[in-house]
Image (cartoon, rainbow, N blue to C red; front, side, top):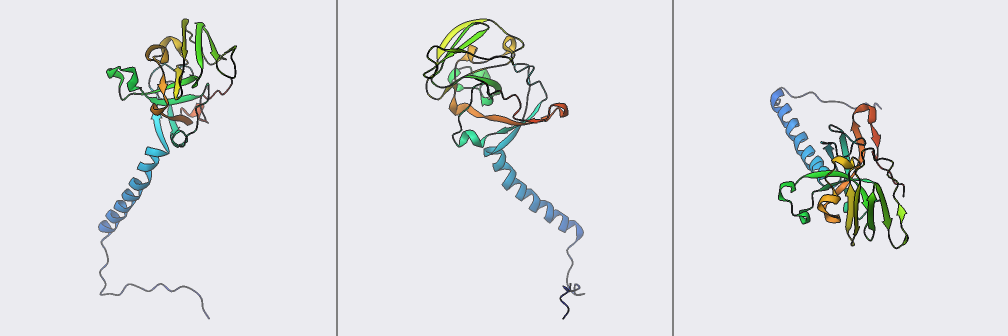
Length: 205
């Protein structure tokens, strides 16, 4: 017995859909599927961002194209010290001209930390390190001496740019609430010479 599939020809009296109508239908179906998949994906899972400005120089520069993981933070993942984070400018800072802006900085202080800067040295004190330890800041190539001390409450982070001399960060506007965190970059897709996973992440103590 022949098992070959038979394709029946279209009967002469059947109406063939026009090529243009068929194409439009396919485009519409594709657009609906893309809208239903891509929009939620960007809203809740990952989203592309383009860096603008010199505050994270030399780690990131204007034009760098990043894919940011949003879902990990939404699912309760805690930020790590020295990791890079994307966030919405905190409304709690009460600077209306900055509202709605998205920034990229590095996490320096975690909830419960006391962050102390003396000159170009940053010291972290917390329950695990009551005597404090000096933060490794080998990624900083443009330092700016300072002097301050701040203790972070639960749900608060202290963030700074790698280019300390050009960064508008927690030293100027205060703490970053966890609720304003968008996520962390998981891919750098541009420039081609710097493509990589978890760009800028430095999870040293």
